[in-house]
Length: 129
Image 1 (cartoon, rainbow, N blue to C red):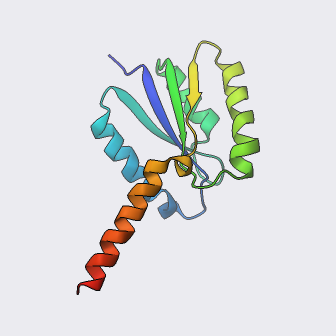
Image 2: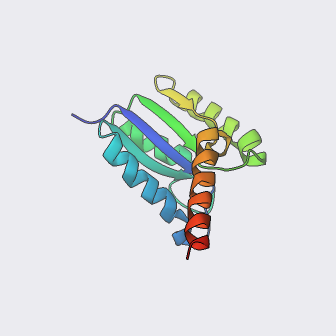
Image 3: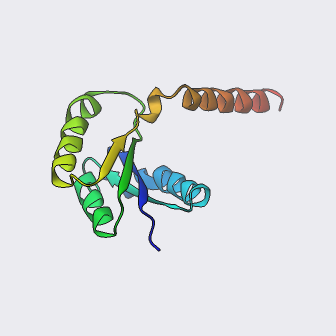
């Protein structure tokens, strides 16, 4: 039975394909942690698939719920302007789909706490050598 719930990790995109490697790593971690969800990557520009193409494909696979997680540190123009328009268009194109979006990961205190913890850990490791 196919998964009916999906998470789309949504990033900016870049010309260099290696830019997406951290997102692919996160995708792998989430595939292990959430086996009942389909985990996909989508990009705003410069890389494929786009968010509309990704959502179209998921709907075609029978997915009924999609949560989009923006993998952005700052909430700039893309998240303030482009992202809401994309979500509105997708909701109009797929009215039966339950489509939600979290805040950008850069807005999550736990993300900054984890980064700070790693900086402290690596600083202490380097200092003790």
